[in-house]
Structure formats: structure tokens, C-alpha cells
Amino acid sequence: MTHILIVVGLAASLAVLVRLRLIQVDLFLAWFAAIVVLGFASTQPAFVNWLGEKLGILYPPIAVVFLAVFLLVGIVVALTVSLTRIRERQLAIARHLAARELDEQERSQRLP
Image 1 (tube, rainbow, N blue to C red):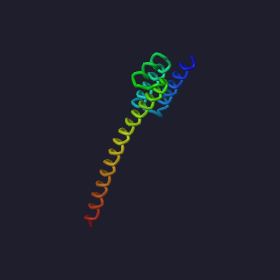
Image 2 (cartoon, rainbow, N blue to C red):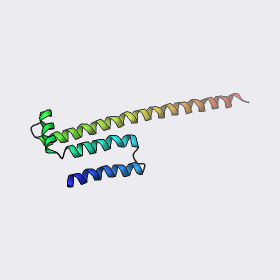
Image 3 (spheres, rainbow, N blue to C red):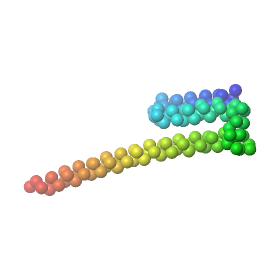
Image 4 (cartoon, rainbow, N blue to C red):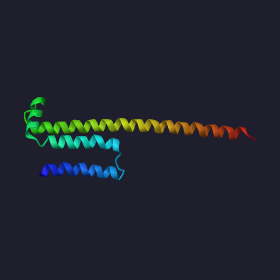
């Protein structure tokens, strides 16, 4: 019962962060899905044993840790891609503003 409360508590805390606009909905969905799926699945001994067997891990609980790390790395990669896109847009805006400022300076120098 405690494990279910922990999973529900983590999911609820993510929902609160979305409500407070600290996390956007598109980023929230990956975290929420990871917490719910991994949280509930890892509490089932049959799933843990099956996962350990499929991954060839001798101690099945480590398979859940391995899966959690894999999911976290996937989320980090997705966030890195998003950050890269944002930085590219920021640089494009800065270049545009710099070119505009340069044009204005050139115009003001031409006028007597």
C-alpha cells in the first residue's frame, strides 16, 4: 500500500508543478508516464522477475533500476534537444536584432 501512495504522491506533485506553471504540459507527460508505468510495474514481482530475465540480469530488482536510468536518460536527451532548439532560435533572434541595429546605424550616418 505504501508503494502506491508514493507513486500517487509523485504523480500529484508533478500535476501541482504543471498547475503552478513550473513545468509545461508537453514535458510533464514524459515524466508522468515514466512515474506511473515504472512505479506500478516495479511493485509487481512478476514484472520484476520477467524484466530481469529478459535483460539477463541475475538480481531482478536491479533490472528496475536499470529501466529507471534508461527512462531518465531518454528524458534528459529530449530536454537537451528542446534546449538546443531554443538556443538556436535565440541566436537567430540576436542576429536579426544585430542586423537591424546595424542598418539603423548606417542610415543615421548617411543622413546629414
